[in-house]
Length: 289
Ligand SMILES: Nc1ncnc2c1ncn2[C@@H]1O[C@H](COP(=O)(O)OP(=O)(O)O)[C@@H](O)[C@H]1O
Ligand SMILES: [Mg+2]
Image 1 (cartoon, helix red, strand yellow):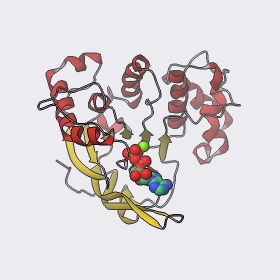
Image 2 (cartoon, protein in one colour; image 1 turned 60 degrees about the horizontal axis):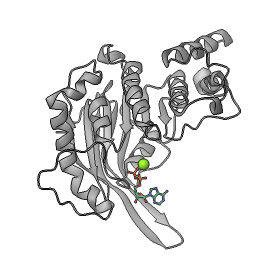
Image 3 (cartoon, protein in one colour; image 1 turned 90 degrees about the vertical axis):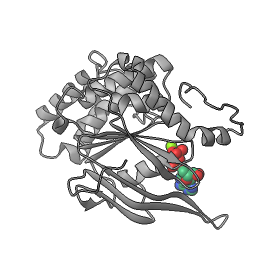
Image 4 (tube, helix red, strand yellow; image 1 turned 180 degrees about the vertical axis):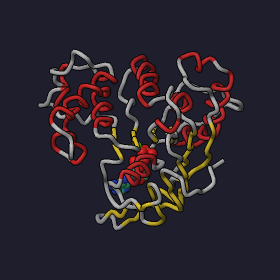
């Protein structure tokens, strides 16, 4: 199950809980309860679970955008107290600046934030060029976000994230708004860009949230399955599918078994969340949830 606590963890969550207080109703909601998780450097972790189970809350706490009510969150053994350029965040809704070109969006942190500190103008420009090329956007440097497809916009967001040189990538359903085909292509692209052909020491540590079980199994080294009300870690599964992975992995019987196993863990809650009744005894895994 979970990797034993070790001093070498890139990220460590120990007994993390988060409550939200609503002043208007005077009610406190326990969104996340007692989450413990150790993430090693270079690991690709996916967090899946039904809507509202606290996935974004966990990610926001690692990003330092939200404070835990209880427990500890550390990076490299140091408590996380706020946002930092060492942890890059990417969301579903692109979050690009519409009045800036691709090049300007990718370079924003380098020209206007701490990630560019100590770099010459030429070095910044080279870095922007490198990451635009890495995500396959050569030729689109001068375009504005409205001139790009959803998939291209997420490529820009990914290039911007990487250009800032974080060593942890935090992604909250980054492919969630894309059509199914674009999504499959970008899953493979994401693994390439993350460095699945490189040795683990050279890969970034990635925490990726999705409600799509197949996406999680395809991408991850380990999948964290959460349950809701309050959000807890229900299970952590190793995904021992060989890397590099491409679309052929989806035909691997182990892939199918893992998808089905995760679906069996969250099926009941997923049905409850939509007000439906699970009439299946041994349901086959559907595509996504
Ligand atoms: N800022 C907030 N204030 C109050 N409640 C919140 C806030 N953010 C999230 N919650 C609640 O915490 C729970 C988990 O939310 P979230 O982390 O967004 O879930 P997920 O990302 O898994 O869909 C939900 O019940 C949600 O309503
Ligand atoms: Mg969310």
